[in-house]
Length: 146
Image (cartoon, rainbow, N blue to C red; front, side):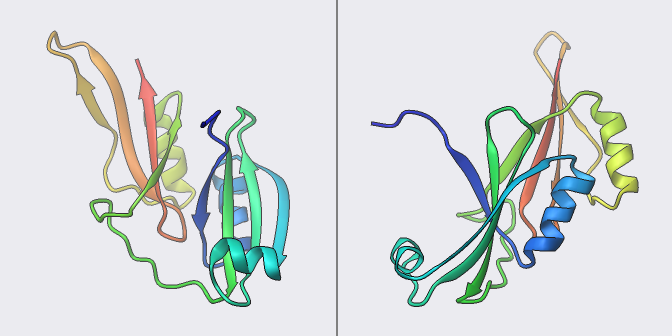
């Protein structure tokens, strides 16, 4: 029986570069680093001689993002588009999405568009949202609720 969500994991090419992105650009806090090899890692990941480096970052709301760099076997290319089966994204709630968009654009985050607005049938603004990718191509969604 499922009890709760635990964390979300992204495979990354360079753990240090990606930690820097999530802490410096996105403002998350680094809460731990790991390195796994040996029998446990090989069995769990189903790769002979598996070796990974990892890190956990968070906003302090109870959900953590796990960043995983495969050392053995090495990280693959992983060029998934948003509409490819197996592609995923992590969504964040933001306040002031227009300011967030302007600020993060200046910090080098590349968005696929400016914020899109969703209205109900009466014309009431429900939300604004946009997508971007982290340095490893993982999709991020940013949503402001009204």
